[in-house]
Image (cartoon, rainbow, N blue to C red; front, top):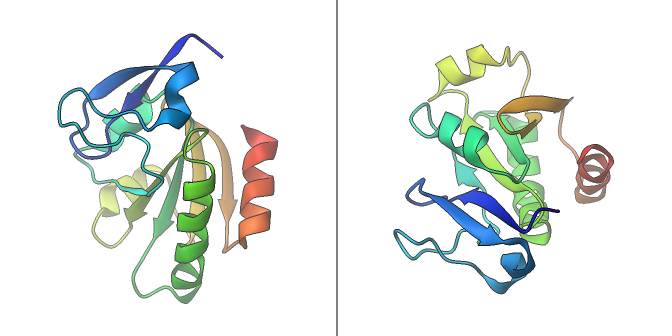
Length: 144
């Protein structure tokens, strides 16, 4: 792992350079002073999507979901649970496909929930369908 990594603040979208040895110490944003690794999924929109994906050195796992989707509702607490457990390894994010149809269309989302793992803005893996916590963690560890 490099000496320091870039992490985009989930609150103000500022890029923060964090020493790799300090990832578990609750680093705060230099601009807004909020935690940059708070273990909660980031809500992505067309406005912050590219900044969050392209400027984060951590891989970014995006959950494409909709409020009317039963499997999405079942998986939401699992996604949040795994986000807390893996906060220093992966940035977790969510895209509401009803509100962000252009973003969903750009990635050819045909079924939901769909999870896409990105590294430096490039898709590296995709998984469709709801997963339990163990399966999600296992899948992530196999691809990061």
